[in-house]
Image 1 (cartoon, rainbow, N blue to C red):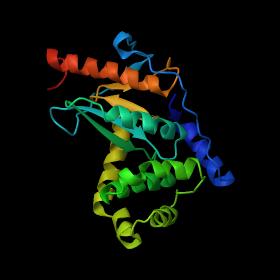
Image 2 (image 1 turned 90 degrees about the vertical axis):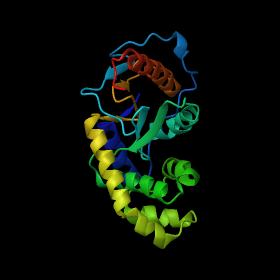
Image 3 (image 1 turned 180 degrees about the vertical axis):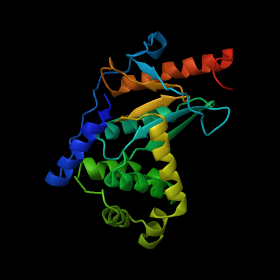
Image 4 (image 1 turned 30 degrees about the vertical axis):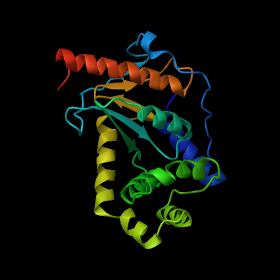
Length: 231
């Protein structure tokens, strides 16, 4: 289900050469009933080894590793956004843009954090996905990203400063560190409580990944209640 590092690389080359990006259409299959789902390790999920501490003590942290350049991530975005908006209070949801060590993907990750820092993410988040995948806009260079943002009504001088700010650099470095610690090889990738990663090998569509995540949240919550997981 996730777009692998190799597939991501091939897609980027195709985009830069042909000006197009393959967009995977999200399956319309409704999500499995998480309450009836018996999760199977190695099929639905895999353990994160070693387990990773969250950045918010006392909360179950859910991370979505993604990239604006990933067609699957574009299809997943409205689904996971709606899902995240209904999470209980003991859960915190964070998105982490991946770079896979490539300059083009780093610019997309930097764009995400610059929009977040400037207060423009809520307004332009989906617009970035649409620009790349619907209008085939190349946002893989700093100049292209800045020009695009300016065209969306963002004040160019301020955004340019934010784009290369210490805060954005720090967030970007942390994102790259997390991708290494969590051994991310494909996106979108959902992790729960620093212990479980959604696989979804038997998933019939992207919504099923969220049903699995619901099951992993219960597993994490039960583990904390019994003392198996960290407090």
